[in-house]
Length: 335
Image (cartoon, rainbow, N blue to C red; front, side, top):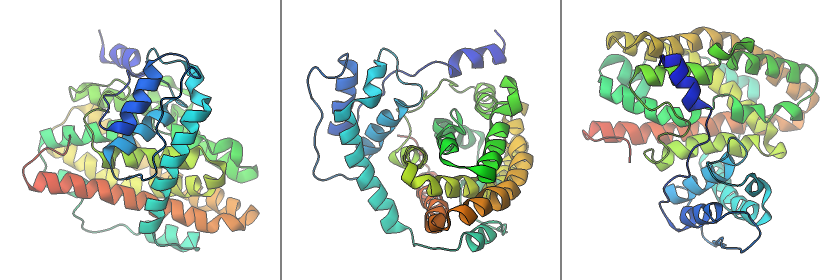
């Protein structure tokens, strides 16, 4: 079987329910595995929520995945179950409060994007480390972290499309169109990432490594869904995507250099090479055509746009600090 066929057969499927790691995720998984909703309420009503715990982040990811591809042998009726949504809202509120408490507010989106576009000349995060000295095994390990998002790349941001209007909407769709391969299934970025996973001899199945990644990885992915699934946070979704595209090209270039140094398979290099070029174009579209037009129409969203940008930086830094601290100690960054 060719790699392309293998990728197609693994990426399209729903995942199995994850392994629970605490009382909240265990309760959610037990309910979903029990059958149809509405028969018996088995969900907790936590009064204290530690949003940094893997238990909470896994429970959130499971709730969110019901809006994406669902899970094997889990009824689609759970997607809108009021008891599950009530629990999700409690977990979301704690997570959002945690992020807001660690992100300084701002109200100048243009200045924020300008600052993000200034390319750093040095750094201590994974992209710098993997460019210069990381091993192939550490690169593969980092692929595992990234796979939780990249196998559904662009999907969390797509929730914003029906919530935008005019030129901001049209330009936002243009960026997403590129993320989905410009109409070509073999160029969808999710597919390109799966090909890179197969080339690196890793599991390319959707959520294939959800049981291996730490809370920081889950939080990094969950933040996108939290923003995208709430109309009131559409400004944060736009800001998040803008920051993602503005910072992606330089980081992707470092990964290309690291992968070339390691003589990695061409499919691994191709994924990041695609992002070096495409995201440089997307940056300009988002800065001027999306954010610019959105804030001309809805200036009251500017603080949320800035929040989305800074929130991305916060969760990415938390993940980077976890990875680098483990690697510095000669340990795996996976659970």
